[in-house]
Image 1 (cartoon, one colour):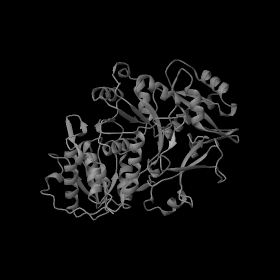
Image 2 (cartoon, rainbow, N blue to C red):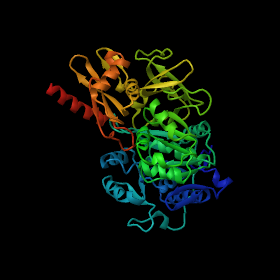
Image 3 (cartoon, rainbow, N blue to C red):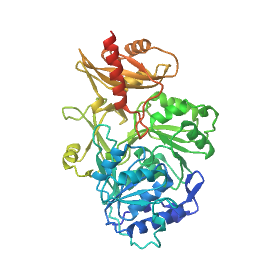
Image 4 (tube, helix red, strand yellow):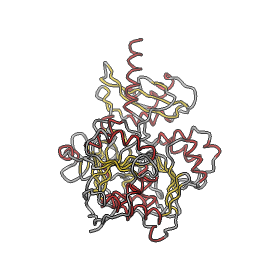
Length: 508
């Protein structure tokens, strides 16, 4: 069975080839033009003596050529392995080595980085899409000569590496069939169509931007790509291009809300805001609704191994603020307690998911693969959640984030939600520190919107939480540290909080 993910993503190339597909600065690509470039690149790659199923790493910034490369690699029957110009060299080198990539495809400003890291991994061929640059360009290789293979539905389309925030990055194997199923389901759920215009500034290699990219192209909309995220530039682009669909991680939206352009732009065209990839507070959703009056502001949840998209706020019908939403159609979920039983309604446990898009496993790691799946095929997500009587899911943090305070379970998200209701708190993250009596205790790191003190916020928490859950200290920062994907770097915050807490303890 032929099930080519790259062709299914470009239906407008047949139905309306003159429709604009991608805008980046002065570059505009129609669907017909994008289809021609993807087909030509696939044939060039097929003529490069790369065996079907070979792994090809991609190293680009936020560049339209990443889209061409991603689709072209898959159409050539190869497996795409995304890298990032935002990763440290060590991480990119590790992925290049561990993935057994045969080649590294690059363009633009990422070429210098690609040269550097490819030189550290013997046997990797460096291929460039940059015309007029220092490196030989694939487009200059002459007439395409390679024949394209048929793509089996269950063959691997992508080998995507997880963030590695809890250890060595893990290679996640995703199939053509699973990815097509997931993004078709997302597009239908969000009710995207050819009239939509999506503004993308999150890293294209990341699943958040990847969802926007693939769902938009699959439904024939326009994709405006910005080279990086800057809150003012993003808001101006949303105004200029009459963006209808914007998506990002919570940290991006917090920065937008503090930018002056939020007060001066015209955002009447925005009909959908999708916020996810990290915990989304009810307060953030309400603030966005003020500035984007015609938009549905939705929460969402996914993980690379999970399809990737699993939960979305329903865009019509019943809605529950504070919930991450409902399982997408075709996805089964359940919540399991520490002792292995199915959790009761509103009882917190680990979220398990099952759907056609779930990974088939970790590359070269059968033991980890076996540990992540139950005997009946459910993936253990590592995320804590509870499900109410209507099926709405409420995330409570990572399994590893749960803080055991003298035998009492404290979930950081619940403490964060309370502190975010204080009018002086703009952004808040709760992390654990060692406690000589309780074993561990929560502390809060806060970005202020108005003057307040740590004592005031601690008292506020004591009034609204069980005493064992209140933060033992509150520390203020001007902005949250972010990881390469643009999400709050909780590991860095743990280090900051632990250092400050130790200094406070020594000073007492």
